[in-house]
Length: 323
Image (tube, rainbow, N blue to C red):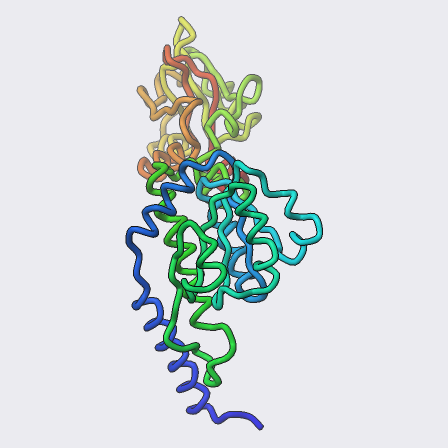
C-alpha cells in the first residue's frame, strides 16, 4: 500500500517539525564548558564510541572533530570487547553515545575505561543511566519524542546527538583559533584546499618557458618569441635586466587597428610600463583575483628586487582548479 502524496508530505513535515523542536530544546552550559576544557587538555586523541544508529552518528562526530583540529577516531564498542580497546590509551579521552545509556556493548567496557583513568564524556538522553553515571561529563541529548510515528526508530534522538557533537566540535574549533588555512590542510583535495595551499610558485612558468625580450628587440622578433612561448605576451627587460614592461596580444590588436607600421617598432616603444605583477610566495588565488580585477589573462611574477622570475596565465589556474 502506498501513501497518498498529501499524506506523505504531511508526514515528512511532521518529522521535520519534531526534529526542529528537539534541537530547539537542547541546552548547553557548564557541562559543555567542562567537556571542551577536558578535550583541550587531552594529550592523546578523542575516541568516539556508539552502537547502532548512535555508532553512525559517532563516526560522523569523529570525522568532524578530526577535520577541525581535534585528533579523533571511532572505535566500535563490540569490537572493543574483543581487542580493539587496545586502541585506547591513558592519554586519550572517550566520547560515548547512547540514547538510553544502557547499551550492553558499552556497559561491558565502561569499567575498563574508568580503570584506565580515561576521561569519559557521555552524549545520552538518560543522564541517570549506567553510561551517565560512569561519565565525568554528560551532554544531555534527551528528546520528548522520536520523529518516527511509532516513536521507535532513532530519528530525533540521533539528530540531537549529531547536533551536540557538532556543537562540541565548533566550540573546540573556536577555542583553538582554528583558521581557514588549518581547515585546508585537512582537506587538500577539496576546492578550499586548492585555493589556500596552492602558491604562485607551484604553477608559474619559469626559465626557458618565459617569453622574454629586450627593450630594443624588433617587432618581428618580439612576435616570434610570443608565438613560441604561447603565453599571449612578452616580458620586456631593460638594459640592466630588470622588468620594464609587457606587450600582449591585446596590444597587438590595437596597433593593427591604428594602422601602425609594425616593422619599424621596438618592444620598448609598444610595451605597457609598470605592468601588474605578483610574487612567487603569494597564493595562486590572490593572483587570480588580481587578474580578474585588472581584466588580464596573464600576470608576471617578480622577486623582491623586481626582477622577472615567472609568469602565470588563467589556463594554469584553471588546470590547477584554483578558479
